[in-house]
Structures are given as C-alpha cells and as structure tokens.
Length: 280
Length: 136
Image 1 (cartoon, chains in turn red, purple):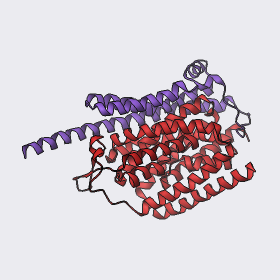
Image 2 (cartoon, chains in turn purple, brown):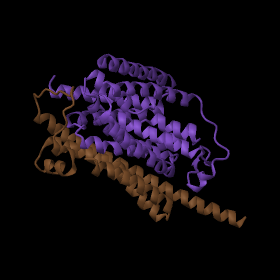
Image 3 (cartoon, chains in turn yellow, cyan):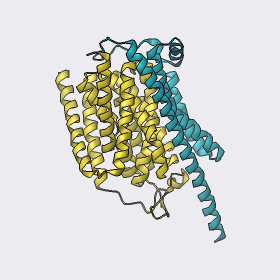
Image 4 (spheres, one colour):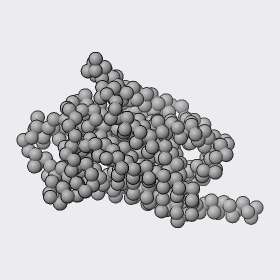
C-alpha cells in the first residue's frame, strides 16, 4: 500500500472514529486505538501516542462551544487536574513496563466498562445535592450554573477525597491507554462528588486536554508520536468530532447512542480476544 | 439585609470574572488547535509528497529519530525544511495549547487575588512542565 493511499485511509478511519467518539460521548481515542491496531495493524504503543494527540485536539477544539453554554467550572477543573496530571505521568511510565498484549487486554476491559458507565449515566441522572461537604465552600468548588429560565442553580459537592482519587485513576488510564477517559472523569464528578451532570460533562472536556498533554510529552520524548500517523489521524479525528458535535445538537440521539454503544462493546471484546490470542 | 446584598454582589462579580476567564480560555484553546491543524496540514502535504512510493510500516515499534523528540531538534529540523519536523512542530503546538490554558488560569487567578487557586494552578503547571522537560 503506498503512503498516499495509506494516509487517505487513515484519515477516513480517524474521521469515523472521531464521529463515533463524539456521538457516544466517549471521545475519539476509544474507537481510534482499536481501529489502528485491529484495522491498520499499527503497534499499540504508536496507536496510543497518536491517540493522545487527537484527544488534545478534540478536547481543545470543542472547548469554545462548551464555554458558550456556561456550565463548566474552572475551579473544579483545575483542582482535579492536580490528580489527573500526576496520574497521567504515572500511566505513561507504566506503559513502558506493561506487555503490549496486556495493554490491548486492559484497553478492551476499560472500553467495555466506559461504554457501560456512559450508558448508565445517561439513563439514571443523580439528584442534585442539598448540602455538600464543608470543604466544598473552603476549596471554592461550590458554584452555580444558568437555568433555561435565566435563574442560577447553586450546587455544592461532597466526598472530595473520593473524587480526587478517582480522578487519579482516570489520569493513569489516560496516560496508559491514550484515551481521554471522559467516562471515568464524569463518574468521579457526577457519581462520587455529586457535581451536577451538566457541569461535570463540560468540565471533564477541559480536563481531558490538560491530562492528555501531561502524558503526551512523555510519549513524544520516547519517540512514540510518529509524523506519518500523526498527520492523518489528528486531522481526521478532529474533523470527525466537530461534525459529530454539530450533529449531536440537532439529531435525536438516544437510538444512535445505543447502536454505537454496541459497536464500542464489540471493539472492546475484539481487543481482548486479539490480545489474548497473540500473547499466548 | 444590607450585608446579604453585598455578599451577593461580590459573589456575582466573582462569577462574572470566572465567566470572562472561561470565555478567553475557550478562545485560546480554539486558536491553538487551529494553528496546530494548519501547521499539521502543511507539514502533512509536504511529507506525503516527499515520501511518495514509500511503503509505511508501523507494525513494530522502532522509535522515531532522536532529533524529532525534543523542541531543539524539531526547530532545527523545520529550519532545514524536514517535513517530518513540521508535523512534529504541530504536535508540539498542540501539546502547548492546554499548557497555555493553565498558564492563563494562573495569571487570571492572580488578578482575582485567589491565592489558593494560584497555588493549585502552579502545581498543575509544574506537573506539566515536569513531563515536557524532565522526562527524557
């Protein structure tokens, strides 16, 4: 296969990965890494390196749209980024010692769990908290967001150490697998800290870029971000996710979401099966 | 009653400042991504043209050349007209985008005189710089 055709196919594949990632709310990385490893037979470490770059691009590219809604909390984001960035560095170092087939298997498991989390989160919204932890105010994590009628809805958070710890895990998974791990970030904020769903999803988008940047530096130094892949993949995922985000606003997505969640589950199983058969 | 109004006013003002901060940060990220995408596109087109006929193989990990792994090498590569270096420059710009956002937040919290969040932003920035600079 010549470079031109290879590049064109990669661009198209990445575009679809970005589109699926945006429509399922799981991010481009979760579809991209299986696509590159299963479809294009790229070494999983290269796939992870280039995926991190695409994750930064999608998160930053979507930022302006999220800001316009006015739900995100810059303080909750910054506070929890301490945990995600340190976790991301740990994850990136772990990636050097973990066997590549083991990486594939872990990836498959995380993929399935993320799909489950995102499906569950969409179905069972958490009721807003009446009274949060006293630290919620001291750390200035309490805030408010605009309601459709123009009033502002105040919120507080609870179980800050629990959320912080889960964010560390989210960061480590991001650095290890090259994904945004948005589903785990939303889990930490939404389920553990009881941050309102609108606030947690938009804030998690900001955090994803910073988290991925922390591990991308390490992947770059190790020579794991390769120009021939970075070019078509980064542009493809970015275009796909922007198209997906636009479509998401207009379309009725619950059916689509279910269909794509099944696609993601299938990819997860395939990653595990592929990892196991190649390893043993 | 008067006290409460005052508290509400100052609270409201703080939210407005945070809101401005987020709007500027959103723009900052967008500009960074646009710039990186543009450089990526230029580098990519030159790269594909330069390597026509080459057969790509990424099946096995075989590390990129040393020169393309750090800022100095990438810059001198771009100066020498190496298409791969232009793509890596785009990658560096992309990694720098969220870092710039954290630096901006640090300054904005400083203007708001929020010492706690200046400290928190400084920790995040230190972790990012550690991964970018020290981990070679």
